[in-house]
Image 1: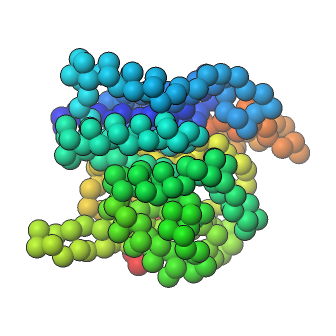
Image 2 (image 1 turned 120 degrees about the vertical axis):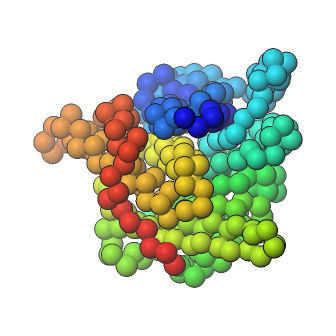
Length: 312
């Protein structure tokens, strides 16, 4: 058995359903990681439902929790994982904590999903306050090791538009230059070679060899589009990518194939089950579309590869 690998995951918590820490913890535990969770919010359910209630953790409260860990000398981590955040001071505090943890353990890997917005019908819009962009761009991304932006977020962070795969590869190079050695653009509106029913994700892993030369591995993953709006998929994706890049540190191709394949298994199971619950001809609602996480345990643990990546 390999020595224990510990993840500090600072994300949302919901009582019901699977987003944030609820979407990340189970997969990481199943894949053998110790997961310590800080719940940045505690809501009854995700905000896609008609109603939601709950509390938000502020940056002082985050600091206090971290101080508790520090006083007990249990603030040594192998990974930090963060996702959706709405508050600039909270995000700045996360950066402080990551920097301190990297002093404790220089090999710590920070996996950051820079959640800011998305594109609908080709039009991008931000669903977090605009003042988060400079914090992500100037403070967070420089300390991150693995980032998982969607196309819109990659464009925001670099100030460049992506129209072609070549544009996307250049944007990933700009992102590497900002800090992270692994960049995965998790979804894009690029034309997939396999056709319109497929979604393109792109990955780039830049390693610096002992002699200082840089080698970059780039891949393209085409996965079948699933016709539904899921919540928590990005959180699940980042968690599984963390796990599979840990298990295949120099093979982004295999790590992405396993991540995206597991993702497909979960989404297919979810949509199938949601349709049954909704009944013939009805559109499934938010509660019915909650990810079938527990039911997918075997697929998460050992995903059958149903999506292949192409080395570019």
